[in-house]
Image 1 (cartoon, one colour):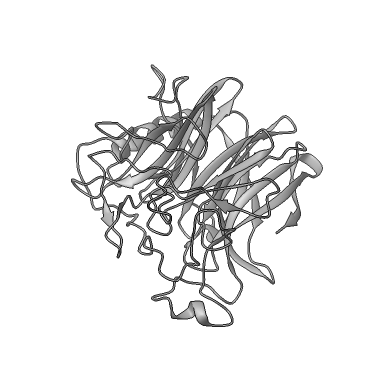
Image 2 (tube, rainbow, N blue to C red):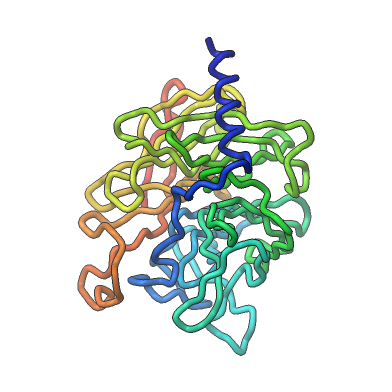
Length: 358
């Protein structure tokens, strides 16, 4: 039966990633890309505001974080030395001190939006930044295609974790009939892999091997299915796949349910190999007395070798996007998906424990 199911999945996914029929995308562009209700995101000024779907890369003793579009930036970026204080990247152009864009050049095929101030940017989702060699970094991201609005994944390149990253592609790396989003570039035992969410009914988490430079998929590689939404708490949604090998076990983290609500949560699974099979282990981050709707998580190791999990969450009781900036002047502030970093530990039989969640 497993062989039959695998063949059936490959047939279905071939339809999803094929280019035969352009259907309306199920994942719309971020409605709040221009920064409505967000704290000011200024170069060189410590920041703790909206930073959804964070990804963190450690290079030496410094940490670099990137996120879904905020403040009308295609690729917002910050750095930290202690995982507590995060500072937005410096401005690329001293004449434009607010302009701290980490991906100033965009591919011609991608949809471009314009900020209230008249600056263009990409409505990009859930980037993943990885090191492919000395002084070589790549940023995988999802963005709508200009021709039909279908959300696709592409890869930009740069010489530093803070960029600037440039995407000179003439077409995206992959699109789907209903869109692909949430890329994660994962290196395991010398090989690079790309994890994705393939939008559909139901949504699926998939993985495919990349070539060593992450410029294309590896020759003769194919997609492998990892998880499909099926549990009640998942609400028909699985997304933001991210893998890591910890204590000789391979873990897959994922988000589920509606990201705009307190029902959003982070689950995890254990996988036999990068290509599966994967077995769910339950919810890891849900609602608490202070944080709600925890998701968009990405694992990494800190300088002490401890497993960390960067994720976003609403403050409990302050959930849902703002419609204007008036809430910034209130005591509670505007609801924002802020970035937090948890410390995870190993429990019995491969279970994970949340040791701290700040």
